[in-house]
Length: 393
Image (cartoon, rainbow, N blue to C red; front, side):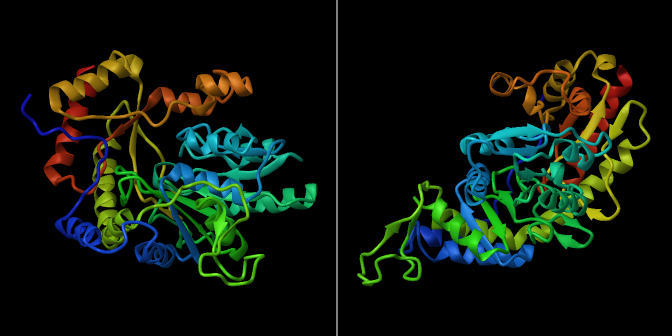
């Protein structure tokens, strides 16, 4: 096989991106400098939020969001079983209990009806996952949260996991604007819409949450005069107000993020072009299923997933290996249901059979190449090779 390898996803770094990083390397600040605030302001502006706090990973963003919400032992945090484990681990980090709510079969997004079944007096937060780049039903989930707050007489935080969804919209509102939530988290891993190598962010419109997010990002320490208990204004003064972490994102990586963000509109346009071609090609092929795109939402297409009956194809492992070895096409599975992971089974007592829709989706799903650097011939190659394998079996 001499064909170029096509991964399921990867970054697209331009010469301008490289030069931006080189300039920062040659500058004064590699970390804790002006590029951080510049990147945060650019993110907040793009998403339509008041504030952004950048951190060193999407996982860190989830963690400080839970910390800012005051989540602690005895609390429950509801999320989807079809997600990367970090969406649930952030509850464990705070001593709380993750609780899973099953998905909608047609979209693989968390089902508001299932969320409603799980809300109780211990619920402290809900983390809907905007899986593949499409928004969960935030208006409906927000309404559920407001009703539950009245019923239980307590604040329930709504934290959007938008690691897949930078650039997506819901009823023409940008994901990240926090129109229906307290906070929204993003990820800048290389396979995401923009990259800072590793990195993430939390967006919010709440000034108090913003202040707490900043504290938890950097050791719980502040130098802001308005927050200091010692008002003597010594130039070296700082105070630790919380048990925070070193989750800072360096200037070097923020510089890359600023450059990448300028290219995001073109990245999104190309992802949607590829998705449109995939949908056209696969929609009429017997044996290939597709997740539904809701008309009131605009998908950012972090992933493109096809649904196959692998029992008729010799098994998923064989199918994936054939694509890679014969055609250079690398596919992936998103995700093994979180509740079936050994750690969750041990800590929560979950097991196979608990969430039938999530498990049924998992048995069929396959993520195929989706990234803006793909050429039209690359896309056609993916289509042709999958068609060939499906028809052969």
